[in-house]
Length: 317
Length: 319
Image 1: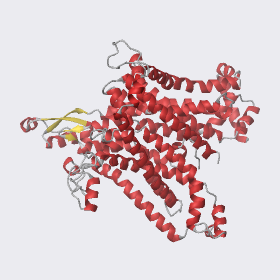
Image 2: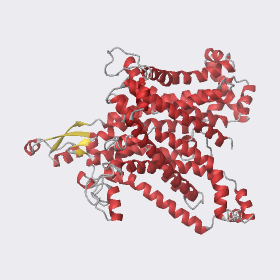
Image 3: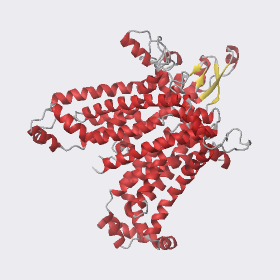
Image 4: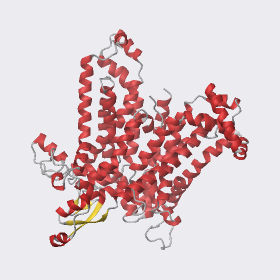
């Protein structure tokens, strides 16, 4: 290590430079994390602590936000509440302290499940179609290859609202509006362009000699694809799948315009969580926190492939 | 080689189990297989992207309204295009969009390149801190927009509190989202918070692509650090910076979700970027023909930018 540093001493930054650069970056990282940390703290505050001035950093943790996220409540008179039996569970007792009773579950869980089904459904389809096309574009001489690849990319460039107008009419005509299948197909069509471009990059990196050797061993082209190329491309396929998953999970414009109840996903639902007298910030923060946690995990998993993903495979490390 | 023959033995067994399928697939030439692999994607894109696009083009020449589909459709020719291109409201929206795009791109490029330059000094723990910095760009823009409205609340919001703390102004004396002069900047701040890491990541790749020996040669020639930066670092990272700028430009030109949740275009129409104007025309006043024409105009603009973008991509790729 030291000998390597010494050999490159003319271009290696000095210790002072490194410390200075490091402290500036750490400062930026801390500032940029404050909004996220704040929203996660708010999820564990009581409604009064959440809107106190000056903002509270130290507070008594409360699960009221999560209770309000998962339940709907109705206001009752103290006499009525006293006439009830013992509270059923923690959320009911929190609600009763505020002269309310739990009326039933909220829509958050169904919306979250819709998000899961639509994100996973569209990811599986997009990655399957994308892998096949990417292999086709990578290995075979396809006429108009560059034009087709550009066409595939350009579909991703359209403003979502411009796409939503005809899709709205089309889905209304064929009965796909506000259905999970409709959203899965739509997200697949958006994601497949990313999948083709990313996977083509990954498959290009697998030497053709592997398949050729397998085909000499008696494999057909298709067998070589399944038994040799696919296992080699596992990392690329996994990274692509996570990118597709994140897109579908985060998407808002199509979801808010094309779904209303049945197939609504979490992003259009979270902003409309309201309590008595305006937005219920701890509940919104709790919903946001639960929604963001998977993304944080995925980002950490993806960190080595992020650059490829965000540039459609153009820039590799 | 050993691995291959081991796996081939497994395949032969698999082939024995399903001889029918295997024979059918074995008979395919590479050419057929290529089309078999590519066609499903193209068909899907034709059905969900191209057919609707053609439909939009047709609608943009008619008086069709999605909420009154029984009214007979009349062919209007290019009337909508003419009225859009002369509509002061549309030009106002384009100006708002331009303000948003230009300022976000400038701020993100300066901050992003600066950060990448610092991270490239490879201080201890730079990998971990880079991952932390990257987090905001992976989040849902809609959810981000929504929680920033909380941070921007005049009395209780953390953003106002911090500004008040450092400037001595009262936290309730300004409204980031309700003020005509502040709200265009409020959306720029959130976008910069979210997307600076994106520019940083691409710039970092650019900086890392510069080989050490160029700097070594410059040192031998006694070029100052300042000179090295302007003559080596910046020009060699430039294609990457351009890539980031173009991509951010296109994405922010289309911006809808974050702004829709932060301000919804308000107050008045001071933050009404093109996509929000389009959404209001299409899904609130249901002027389907008119909004289709506007959608086509926006699409042609984005497509032009995308063309430049792909050329830039290829330039970066060829390095």
